[in-house]
Image (tube, rainbow, N blue to C red; front, side, top):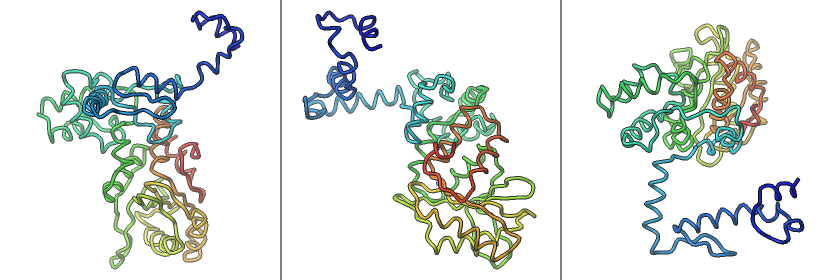
Length: 339
């Protein structure tokens, strides 16, 4: 096969075409990439070492990279996972979708306004989940009423649902704990759930408050604790006891529904997955009517799950069913583990 490819597609003149290994000649991706960078004139490729930016090229190279980044924004799904990036970038042709901004390419005279639009809408994972009035109201924070409505109609007219790429970066790098919680709630709403943020627990004298409450169906709810730890969240025995003895009992019966699921959404890596089963057991010991199962999800996994569902055109009921089935006292660090 290699010889056939070399014969048909490699048209360089050489006398050893049959003997030369075509794959070896063209397989060094890093070397090829670095040569291409050198060809741009923006950097120097020092053979056997690395790419170097000479002092006299620092300013020009930085300006060019900023220009290219604004004109051709990178597909930010690489922040979720390489698999989701590869699929969305077109390596999986069947699931490829264009940007939600469609007819609004940054490389036009509208560039500045479009970047404002993208920034204003970055807190929302699914733009198509907003109606024209809601989008207009958001954009009027910085745009005129006419311009805001024009962009709102343009963004809302797309018939397919697609993840807002600007939300990806804003969510995964969110530093404010409360905003991280709110954005997590927005993802769950985009999956299809009715979500209550920081609902009041049952009982007037109870101060323990969960961040996110998800209405699963007419009989059951799921409570989630968002952990915006920069390094690693570990579900300790103390935190597990707090969930089992306070959070779950305090919300059991909320709006007449039973707590059937619980969990944690973490900004980064997590540990202590083994305590999920202990929470289920302790909650049942406290109240025999409570039967709960839990899960831990990284922010990347949760975001990747929504992205996968949208690109594979799962409806909201399918998304909700698939999501809630994951709560089996298991942790999910990547979207691949959820699927």
